[in-house]
Image (cartoon, rainbow, N blue to C red; front, top):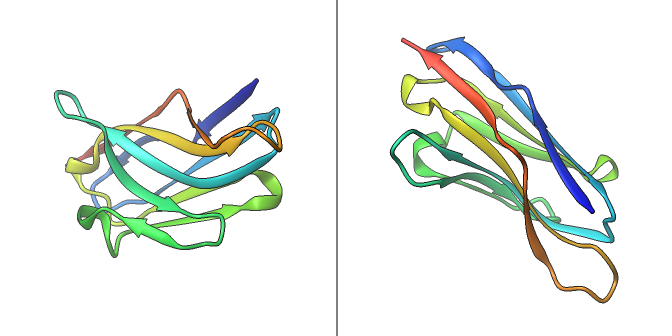
Length: 121
């Protein structure tokens, strides 16, 4: 069984910063890409940032230059550093990981339970 547990969400004023963390644990053979998605009320879930096992990153246009993503492969952890936060960044942020639970299994998507980020104006 695999668990992804996020932490670091909260309430912050516009212009502030938050750092999200997500730890993957359980029966894990290998981890591929990891990333962060978000979903605001009444909107679809969208990709915020992703990072491959080799460190290649990808960002939504709306967060480029403000957010950075990193990972610690030894700790099965992915981070999202969010700077210059705006009220429109308010959403539930979900961690995603593509991983194998055994050497012969295919890569599958796993999700965390989500963490609320609220940016006040």
